[in-house]
View 1 (spheres, helix red, strand yellow):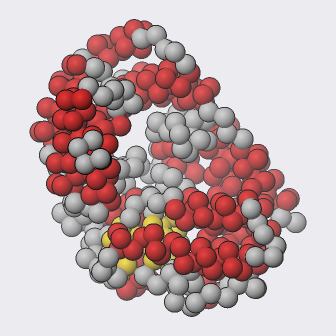
View 2 (view 1 turned 60 degrees about the vertical axis):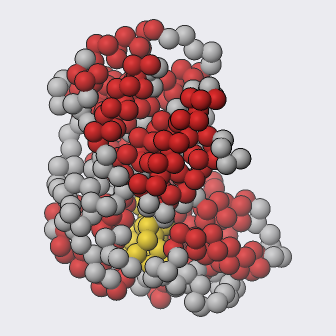
Amino acid sequence: QPHHPFAYMHMGEVQMKLRDFKSAVQLYEKSIELFHINKFATEDSQIHIAYAESLIADSQMEKLLSFYNKTQDNNFDPTLFYLMAAVNRNVSVLNNPTKIEQYLKKKNFSNLYQKTFFLSGIYFGLARYFEKEDQKKSDDYYHEGNKLILSFQRFNLFQFQKNLLKIKLIYNKIKNHIQVNNNYGEGIIFIVGMPRSGTTLVESIVASDNNVFSGGELTSLQGLFKRFIFNFDEKNYIQDVDQIARTYPDRINFLKKDKKYFIDKLPENYFYMGLIKLALPRAKFIHINRDPWDNAISLYKQRYIRNVHYSSSFFGIAIQLANHKNMIEFWKQNISEASLKDVLFLNYEDLVSNPSVGAKLIDNFIGINVKISPEDRSSFFSNTASMSQVRSAIHQKSLKKNDFIDFKRQFEIDFEQQLLFWNSSNQ
């Protein structure tokens, strides 16, 4: 329905994907107007967050501040507060954290999800606010937020590991039998690694070339391979892989249009790297790796409720980092030498310490001309946890962090023990 608020909201989402941020702002404003006219409930705050992100993308920070203050005065939105705590710590209401803290005691909740969603936004927003004001208070809020989310989530890390074993077994079973068009995957660049390892930074650098369009974090290919793995058909897997190889490019063409290169920056695509190379042999991968403890700190500081389910405990993060390391080693050892040449392995520490060298490696690998200055990357926007960082100058502030130091030794033990488990299972 053309005059329904959700119709304008959907059109706004499309314009965000197409990087037409100004149009997205206008469409979201029309959606909000219709929500108010028709008095539709917007409890989940989805439209408010989408609109705020479009304003950030279009660099309309004064309008964002005005919208934030007006919205929060009428009906406090913890997710909007969390977002603003990341991008603008000078917002008037943020300068009165006592007022925000009162919401922790004020509201009754009908279910655990509602409680988790509401309170975690406050906990993580306050944690961000106090990071430079009161480190202990900030840490306490991070712990409370993560403890709350952990009590809500139901994620079985050990079942997840069984799924990784299944991916390996299937890959080794089919790798010598797949024959697809050798041109499949031409111009597609996958940027992979652990979440919060620097994938968005790499994306912003690669996307600085005019011949590149970034589709952001797309779940399409991951979904296709999940179905392939969990419904593996011994008789029809060759046709199934070929169908994936045909389906995925069709899905991204409306974004890619006439651009020569297209970025898919879903970090977790590293799980399927070898399978993707079978289906899309001309595709290229840039894998970025980061120091485990720095990566763990960064994950722990993010409010992940419905994704990245392991990030709310250092134990869960240690297990997943070991899973990641093992999976990358598996691909290095098992995909063909020719396929390995289509994978560029970068270290986050090297990239931020010497960005020009990293940019040159990327240039030579893809055949483009990237730029690393904030001005050249200013038009890039990512609605991931890195949105407040990715447009700034590349820096080394996130190296060798000592946050949550009391948890570091146990984290290292859990990480090493999990690596030992994988080493024994590979023998």
